[in-house]
Image (cartoon, rainbow, N blue to C red):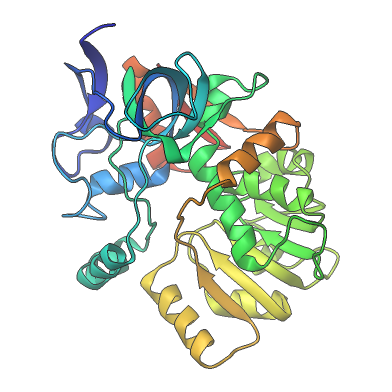
Length: 355
């Protein structure tokens, strides 16, 4: 095996796609409970370039230069001490590193209020990165075997976005055992990376799905399973009003910030909104609703992967019940194009870098 590899990294905050540099660096070595992966595909998430902008400075990145991206699919090449549930040669998908400590999150929230108010975004991905490279080290805890019916690109697009969608639904109160007492859900930005998985998972749970998206993606979102689709640019779409007049028991909000006054009239008596990109304002609002025992609730989502969840999603994919929509594919040599496309926004599904 080669001792060096091609990779894409940045060496300071800021710079966008122009700040990415193509380099030749040493191949990493797996430590305890880690494995070395030959990366076949990686998926860019908005949090990747937000971290480059400095959203979580000085905590993330932990040091420069930094190879970004945590969503990968590839082949196991070497096992570190303590890894017995995978074998060399197996095809896998997963997250390269994902560590969230409540104390760290609290410190970041406290120190970065001004930054968060300015950027208007928060997402609790804490990462070492490493995905934009020919080889990467992955922890055994957040890796799953890849089904034969999933391509590397489809597999790489699943972990972070799929887990965010899944945890959003569970946070809202949705169950996947057929015992849901409520049935109506709204999913905003339903053609995006998280939204398109949320639509499919809501149908797996047996829910009636209303979704919002741009006009060009209405038919796609219908094919994913939505019962009703709203163009977000229309008055009805902006007001989030169901065409059939139903009130929403659950809302998974994947779009930019919306005032509570927009959500409140379309919720059922005990409706709950889960916000996957919460602002400080929405976090404060959720706390107020909690301490005042409000019937209608708002909850921010901070993704913390749990044992068995990725395997659950992979099983659905193997059964054909969960598919990754791919917006575009880019070679590693053009990773900056993928990065720029993600920054531009409005991707339909996932943006993939093939290694």
